[in-house]
Image 1 (tube, helix red, strand yellow):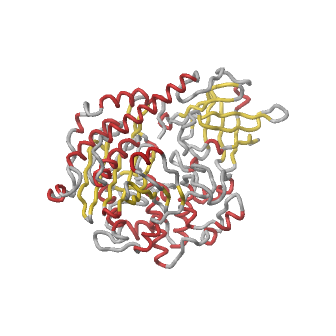
Image 2 (cartoon, rainbow, N blue to C red):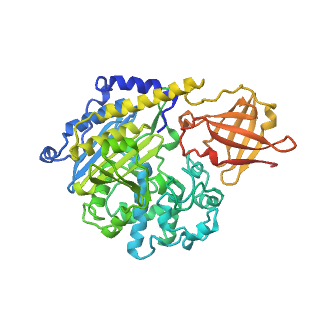
Length: 547
């Protein structure tokens, strides 16, 4: 997560009050819907009262309105609780049945939907994508021909980090899935095919459409009818029933030191175009069932098998090598880290850990399994700071891994505060603010009307730059939320200030001229070099349209 200048003061303040001040409404956990037996709690390595306290502290420290936590061990649910609020306006509490968008932890369900079809003999992991989607094209014909279903799930396509994400987010998207797949041919690779890891969402949309083509039903219906319903999970791949909408979490972000709603990512009840990459809606009771099913090799706690143990193992098999960071080595003695099929895999203190996180503005998820210990932990929340989910999961994992006690809430709050302070200090030395280390004149070379017009990118489509009073306005044709004001920066460059400040992704827009000196196109990039990579402005190359 990027720490912007708007959060620096709040984070530094947080680091100094951990353990001293908590929000009064969060003082007691809301009751668990499926209470664990007291004898089970006493037999676990972690004191559940400590976990309660950590959850409350994490909500306070990381500006997170609400959170739910689940733990399964040796086939049983031993923890399923909600904390804080799913709706700050009405002070509605989170419980174990509260629905959240689970973001990229959805990817494991997309992999499982394909595993079901492998079990059925309908497809194979190494089948070519074009055999199911004849219109699928990458920019290189050889890559198109060789691209397999396995390649769709393993983030090794050769495309850059988050390539094409601007067709998915910010929601609602105006692109259909078919348009997204068609536009892949316009995205340029930044590395060799299968050469290196670069996280990707768009290819999971393709994977969902492969599953749909092979099964004869939509990805949503496939996941619902073959996985969620048989496991009796009150979770939804497509439309969320009206009755279930009564207990949904509202997403929140932290902007200008205030907690604000992220309205664009609210659970609407409707199917989203991004469903196969990050659109599943679920609760802690359902995610506990999912963890039990994974740990049991594809058999749910109700005895229903949804995929074979062989395919569970295939989904957990390493495919793409990931870099191990210094902090991971120091904290967990991690020696390897890889991406499998919809899962990450690494070692911690000698144990194999299968995990995945989910990040969507206003929603955070983190699920981790230690198969050898028959342990699973998951947390869902309706905030936008990774610290809350990570602190809680670390508390559980480290207890079962028999590591020394540590206040993980304080650890991550301090880590974030130090990173924010460092970024602020470095920017100050360069003479700019934390999110803008360049200085501009505040003027541009030409009269503003010269820049107005329609501009078209091969994959993103049309944007209109229009004159409104003394300002220029940016509006995307397909992505209605991509609207903002162009502020003159320098030469032929503006800064696009998005109307939705929760984006935290203001962008430079630099206009280009042809040999006749006329404005002929434009490119974009982040103002904050550490800005969210899901806003892949750097891949845009607009040409001015005569239309």
